[in-house]
Length: 177
Image (cartoon, rainbow, N blue to C red; front, side):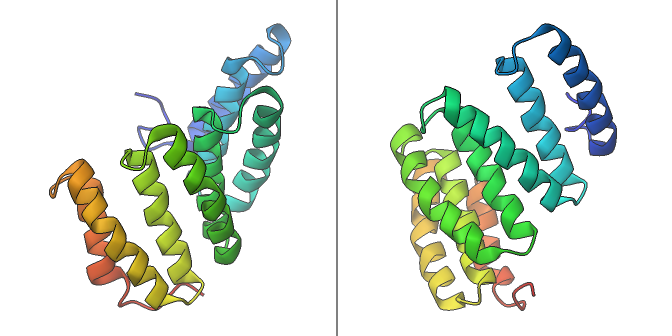
């Protein structure tokens, strides 16, 4: 288990900085190990509550991946997902919705409509829609998502339960300002 996964993203950032310095001395800038460490550092920035810095890091990383990989490469899809979530968390829900509108077709095509990553992106898209103030549309999206999650993952899967809980309880609270 990584330091970040163990719940210490600040320490993880410091370790990723050290690792990246070492990697940059010995590896090509586009080496997968460097790109992966940069991704994990950006995720850690989001986890410590600095989504604006994470957005900058994801944006730079995405440009490098787009230069070296196809648009539906699994790493690009994951970066785009994390980028869209960070944009929403930074207080830009409409931009996040737009990013998810672009991502979900790629995700569905590359991994399939029933893959957890696709279902997760659809859920976060609905959350962003809700945060734009369009609760009615968010409810429609979630009501379409629940049967898909139930069919693909099962009724007791953590993600299915998370979507149900958000629909049942999360929409009652006011949207984030």
